[in-house]
Amino acid sequence: MIRDIAIGQFYPANGILHKLDPRVKVLMLIGFIVLIFCTFNFFALGLVALTVVAAMFLSKVPIKLYLKSMKAIIIVILITSLLNLFYGSGEVLCQWWIFKITYGGIYNAIFVAVRIISLVIISSALTFTTSPTDLTDALERLMKPLSVFKIKTHEIAMMMTIALRFVPTLLEETDKIMSAQKARGADMESGNLLKRIKALVPVLIPLFVSAFRRAYDLAMAMECRCYQGGKGRTRMKQLKTSKRDYVAVLISLIILAGVIICNILL
Image (cartoon, rainbow, N blue to C red; front, side, top):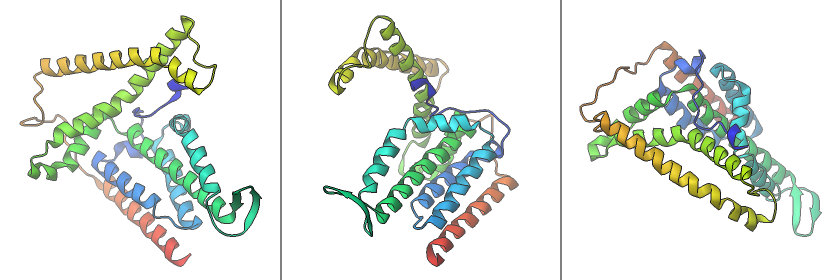
């Protein structure tokens, strides 16, 4: 289960999304996240879902990687949808004790599920199509205006990218530790919830030790390479916008206009 999680991975390919400026992709992601929660009917929601599907195909990333990224939150989606199923108004379809299912509840459950799925897939598309280095440069450039307030934007972008980059590494380390503990006779799948939580202690302690060791090694490697932050630092690869970036922004604005029209007229 853990080894199948694909959060934070970069998949090299020759897709259209790979060729876009990372700054444009980050801004488009922020705008799309806002757009997801501004859909108020099924027409607007369907337009958002079609956009997500189009982004999946344009990225040329295997569909199985997107499905793997969904495994981490499938329980959250089910629980959230189930709770919203009993929270709604309208005609009652069925009722048991204080729980009742209405058309409004089904409407809310579908909306919540599609919104969360769209959010996860479009966020995964950013990490799948953008290398950690490009993502760091994009975040630093976008946060550049904050340097007026003496905020170290380079360090913030570096920390965010390193944290995102080490998610797959730590998940892989967790899977190795769990396999090693099971080979030594540890039982992590039987018993009640409390026993299962206690059985994770032999996994969490080595995982924390390994994480701190990796952080120390990374800090030493950066120090040996005379890394001193963003001050006076040059870049081998300069970010430049091209025609395809402007076309992507134009398409995003058209989709935004379509969602607004669907919300108002439909």
